[in-house]
Image 1: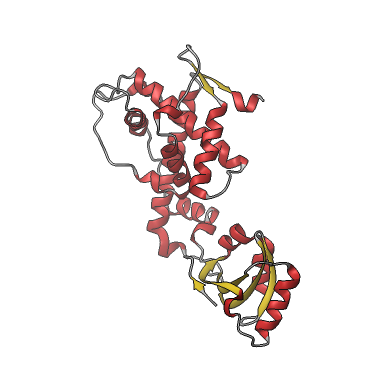
Image 2 (image 1 turned 90 degrees about the horizontal axis):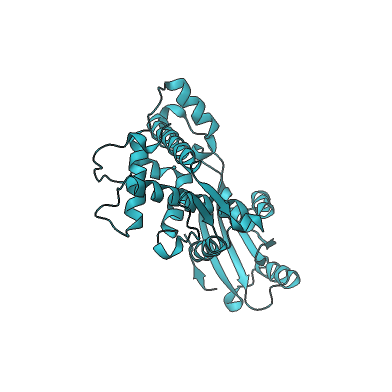
Length: 289
């Protein structure tokens, strides 16, 4: 049997006299913002930022925004974005357009003519200069830790094998194949085998569905079973499973502090850009249809 192993307060009015170049801030490390950062990169090309109006205070979010978002998302994630993901990418596009226009109004484009990304990041650095971290103590951090516990707890993990029949992988054929495997018949060239080690339960749900993850939890180690997945029937054998382990705040306090800092500053930046967006009339053509 062949084997393969898969493994965004204040506005910009208080802008400083000079804008020094600086490395990307820590808030870009927030996991949720990885998606936003990816979106910012997806919308970096000048040809994509199309606003069909002569009014500098009107921003038109055209249908081409959604079309390009879908195309680029699919190219990077191998699937279509869902409604929430598409809305998030549209929000990134709008935030970038607002930051670009605010940057132009502050003339931070001097020396960077037509370089959109630099104007956006310079405008964002002005926003960044005005955000302030509130006071905190261990109680605040502990409460934040508890409300984000899923990020820190060690999830259940699974070692398992997946055999995909070549050709007809109907339920009947897969069940017959499973019976043969459990009887000791080699799978030889009839199926391709994939071996997974330490897969967290959440990734199983994402890849295969909640029912598959539940079935794997109830499976007996070492026994092949026929299991439906989003991509058809598969022969699955659980090798081992490790139980979930709760995280301890005391051991992760430094990590929690950094994560809380990144998330808090990110929320302030998002609020600041949202306040700037109120200066504009936003026309969403896609939503109007």
